[in-house]
Image (cartoon, rainbow, N blue to C red; front, side):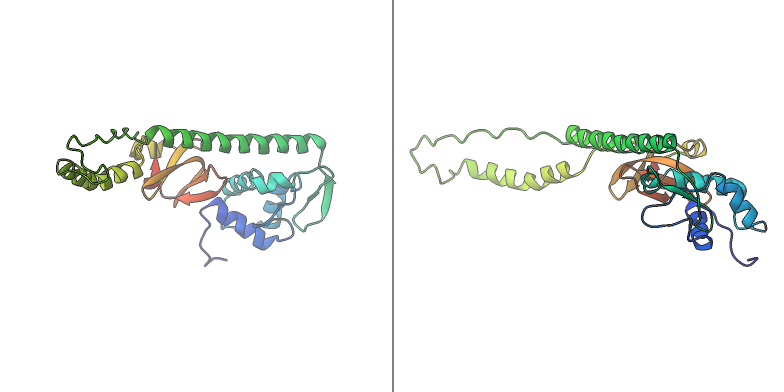
Length: 232
C-alpha cells in the first residue's frame, strides 16, 4: 500500500471503493441506496487508509449519491445496503420523494441549457440576403443562356460562395478563455464552458482536483478537464 500512489480525484476514490466493496458500490448500471452513516463505516473498515483523506472521501460520496444513476435507484420499497451488500433498512418515503425532485430538477436544467444553446446557435448564424430575380435580356436572347454581361458577376459569386459557407460554419463564441483569476476563484456549482475543438459546451463545476477541474456537462456526463480548457 505504501508504494501505491495517492488518489487525486473523486472518480478515482469511487473506483477504489467499488473495488474494495463491490457489493455496495458500483461503477455501472443503477446504484443501490447506501446505508445511512456509510462514511463512518468506510473510515472504520479502512483505518490505515492513506490513499485519500476524509475530505476526499466526503466529496466522492457526495458525487456518487448525486449522480443520476444513484437517484434512479432511490425507489419505493428499496433497501439500503452496507459495505458488504447486506440490507440495512428500507428507504423512507421522504427520501424517495427528495430523490425524485432532485432528478426532475437536474433534467430540467439540462433541457434549459440545450434550449439556450440552440437559441444561441440560431441567433449567431448569419442571415442570407435574398438573391435578385434574373433580368430578361433586352436583345431577346434565350433566358437560359447567361449573357456576356452576367458572366463576370456569376464568376465572382462562385468565388465568394465558399467564403460565405465558411463564415456560416463558424459559430460566434461569446465566451472568453479562463484567466488566472477565474481559475483561482473557481468553486463547486459554478457554471462554465468547456472548449472542445472549435466549439464550447456548457458545464457545471463539481470539484477542483489537483490534476484539473471535474465538471458535469449538460448531457449529465461528468469529466475531468484541464483548467486552460475552461471559458467564462
